[in-house]
Image 1 (spheres, helix red, strand yellow):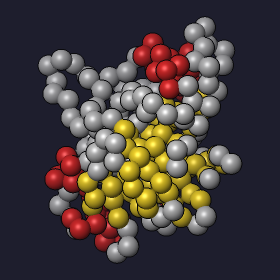
Image 2 (cartoon, helix red, strand yellow):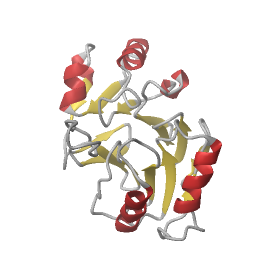
Image 3 (cartoon, rainbow, N blue to C red):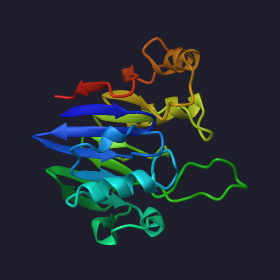
Image 4 (cartoon, helix red, strand yellow):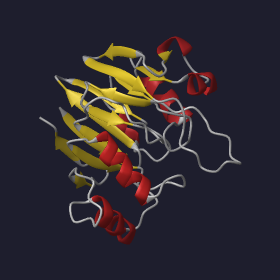
Length: 214
């Protein structure tokens, strides 16, 4: 399996000629959709979901389909028969990938700000993309996509979350607002030299960089 990073929060996974794209939002390069068999969207925030880009991709490829939560599906003014609603504990298969859904809500930003729905996707029992939440899937995770910078997050919570999930490795996502200095600071706490080790190797991929997961 190949993992490709696309901009801020989006990744693509490829295996056996199939391609799955997760959270192609407003900060995602247009070519993330190229060759995609399916799209997964965790929640409605612009950096994870772009109705304009998604609509264009669906128009360009009549075979492309989408799996997301009810909130995104209601907001999308497009071909509804190709947008499938899923929620926590659902499982489905698409393009040769087996997917399970974990979590229901976005992380809290502030008690005064209403929370929105958010689901995480575990793909082939190996790669977990949580969207904007620190959901613990409760099953062994090989590769954890780690949202390293957001208005709702802090380093202490990320360290504790990785320790609880116990992945074999982590890759950074949700990082567009960080400067190079910010990336270095985050890596100092989430990497192997951290004064509070997570127990999992950490790596940051630049946009359109990829890794072979084996």
